[in-house]
Length: 476
Image (cartoon, rainbow, N blue to C red):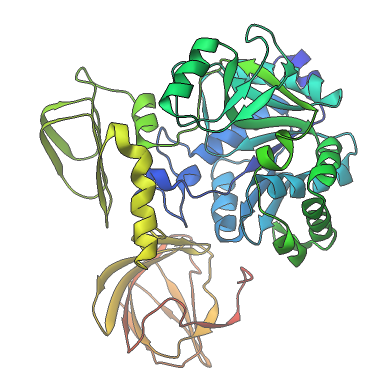
């Protein structure tokens, strides 16, 4: 926990947590509609939950959360799961990289406090020493109040080609000017940067005055400043969310580094050593995981012989290994990844190939989460599909119809309230009903326990887009 002095230093620092991103290098666990920041890969809490807690500890302030439309209920549910409040939850209609996302938060913050300072954090980083992190935030906040746009530069531990670098004058000093921002280097240049001792890893975390950031954005990217300002001026509240206006879609897409930090003369950096890892690959997960005497991290139903320095994660089935080393093996319900630890940065190539082939395994898990619960595919044929549907207590699906399919519902647990055209009736365990093609219907869970049912769909087209909604509490 931070000391009273740190609380005072960070009194008007508002955390901004950027909860977008796909995390394609952590496929098959991380997928577009359930990416790594929502996963519990290194403990009992997700990266998002850990990040929000860390931000609140450092600042004693509720955060502004920025996420995309698709993930809004995941963010809200994960906050409620660990009783975390937020200042505002801003929905990007479309991901446009970090600079416009931060601008949305900055416009919101200056409307509350013209002198607000923002602590901008990606939602998927790991920090081991949270006391040192809070202290670094206090140092950076001093620079931000003096007009600087401050980032944290991590003192490098090795010649790393997976990170960008920041050139500085003296790594032994504290807050100082950032002399240069360098792209991810090749091995030769990474070794040169490490030997020089005047380069830091670019952490992608920032402390900056909200108004100062907007002023520099107006100077270097006026279109982005203009469109994000208009989007927030026309923002609409929707349940727990703030939806920026459509002007956001006109904003250029760019990172804060390219849009502002590489151009401004306000760029500053605090060199830090607080155990930072951006968890950008499976080898990073292996680095941070507990390992046995042979260097293995074995999770789930795994049997191994003559195996060393491996990360093996079994979710649904038995995984056996014999005579292998330095491998990452990740098994899920619908996909298996096998890769050498030195090549896990290339997992994104598999994701790109799946997308190019119009496959769904890069988008969804077999269990797909919705604001009302989830559904999981069990079996599929040319004219039928079987799903297990789980509805949370008190939750309700939309009033809807399907033009191409009919559905049979069989309740296996809990109580279901069914609306079918003008009928409203209740089903208990082992009871079933039929929803004809074209019939308006709704499924609700009126009980205090989860509702679970089996849905059998039949028809010539079974796509998720065969849905016409008439009423939906979630605003879809």
